[in-house]
Amino acid sequence: MYVAVKGGERAIDNAHAWLAEERRGDPSVAELSVAQIREQLALAVNRVMTEGSLYDPDLAALAIKQARGDLIEAIFLIRAYRTTLPRIGHSRPVETETMLCDRRISATFKDVPGGQVLGPTFDYTHRLLDFKLAADGEAMAAQMAAPRLESTPHVTEFLNKEGLIQTEDRSEDTPPDLTREPMELPANRALRLQALARGDEGFVLSMAYSTQRGYGNSHAFVGELRIGKVAVELDIPELGFAIEIGEVELTECETVNKFAGSKIEPPQFTRGYGLTFGQTERKAISMALVDRALRSKELGVEMSNSPAHDEEFVLYHCDNIQATGFLEHIKLPHYVDFQSEMELVRKMRAEIFAAQHKEAAE
Amino acid sequence: MNKMNPTPSQDEAPDSAARKAWMSVLAKSNPKDLNAAITAYGALPAFDWLRRPEIGGVMVRGRMGGTGTAFNLGEMTATRCSLRLETGEVGHAYVQGRDTRHAEQAAIVDAMMQGANASTVQETIVTPLADGLASERVKRAEKAAATKVDFFTMVRGED
Image (cartoon, rainbow over all chains, first blue to last red):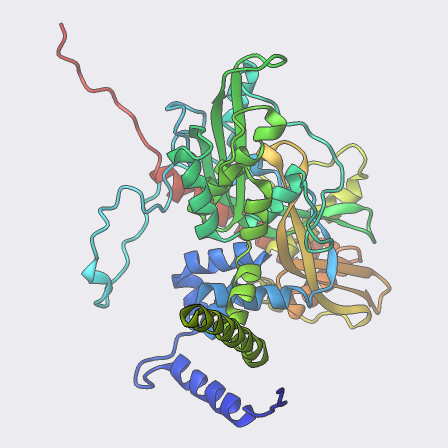
């Protein structure tokens, strides 16, 4: 029997009021401002912008505050806001070669023009808790040295000069946009890169790690990792030329993989590419490895049944908002669904017990 | 590469290259700095809206491998508006973020840069803002330079 029920409004209102109180925490502790989150939890802000697929540090900081630090919830808020924005246009592709690099390292060449610039990195820290941060203390000031203001060439260009690395074809085709049309498989590389750029960091990291451990074995080197600001150029329809409307901080990772050659291609290196908003290098490196793994078919190399080689598996499971939406909906009322399941199990049990009873009697 | 003073490409008239440069400076400047520069300039002319400030998204594109075919990376917030000064000049603004005041002030300055007082506006508003942006770049580059690795080879005791 199905009985329609309503109710819960008061409970919901009160739950939200309590949520607001819990979000604030102990009122004797100073409240966090959005600016404090933006400035002092910048890497959380960067992750929310990257996976929320919207570059706006103030909005991401607000979302983190509202979500009580639950980053997937914050990403959800940003995605929801993003859908309300009218699309003004699309930028010219950013030229990462002109990036003013805060950080730029290569694991393949020691001596590259521009050098190895570490930037504000956690690398080489000892991962020991710093109790000075728990006390009020002055931050150490950054050191200065003679600046390099010219652009820093990409490391892979050096390999390219010898023909040792596969070249990137350059076309000006309009790339597909999964925020406008649903993703269709097989996806081209542009669509895959868009999906991976906004994909869950943990998922993309695990997929990348699986390729390193032998599930679709391919050994990647970080040819180059760079972090810094690039100008965003937008064509202005009223004027007929492009202007720089602002700057975004980006992390770019290029990986190189050895390729033994095929019937048509000589031995050379192949490439994987990662590009993300803000300082998000774990994500950018992971993205580059997974990009390279998903290119196996078009490159005609090491195909396998490994998860990272399965485009459908990767692209349909990398989005944490889709995943959490489907996963978390099962906690919402399923009273009627479950009632029918229960009826079915009762009926099956009754049939089995009846048969057993009959067997015993014979 | 210094993006503060972009050189005109072949298909752009010299005056549109100049306008591109000042519009870029106005868009990239911190709204607080723009407001301070405008306050230093003095009274602004009256204007009528052609398009009131509108907040929206711009899809930022990247290139595969940094140099290849374009793909959609993700959006950024942006605000645009257009206005006409009482003296007739039309100003446009497209600025990053959601600050409608930033867009309004950028559009007013864009219009004033086409009027009779352009050289004063350049001197008191645009040039100081461009200098500020350039010195911020230098400061960041100086910090990065201090973290550049100097490799040295250990003396080997083979001979």
